[in-house]
Image 1 (cartoon, one colour):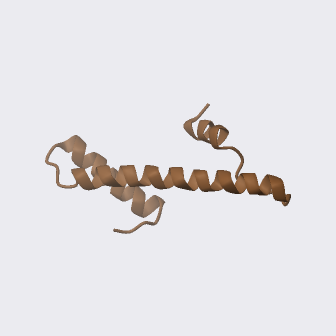
Image 2 (cartoon, rainbow, N blue to C red):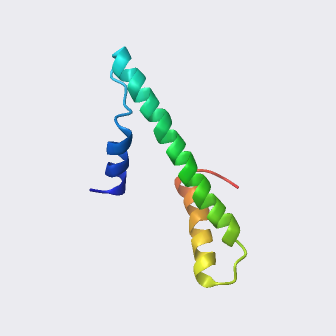
Length: 78
């Protein structure tokens, strides 16, 4: 089981189906998923910022990786 599958199982379905009671529950799941994603992005962004000017290769590499990921994969600019 992948990390994504585990999170999906924990959070629950997020895709609405057109039935009010089910869709209300799935909307709450969607909000939970969005909150989780925001927290994860904030965490990796803070790590990148903290290590941006590091002289150690591994710290700078991690920071650069996150910057590239944010801009190229997520379309988030600085």
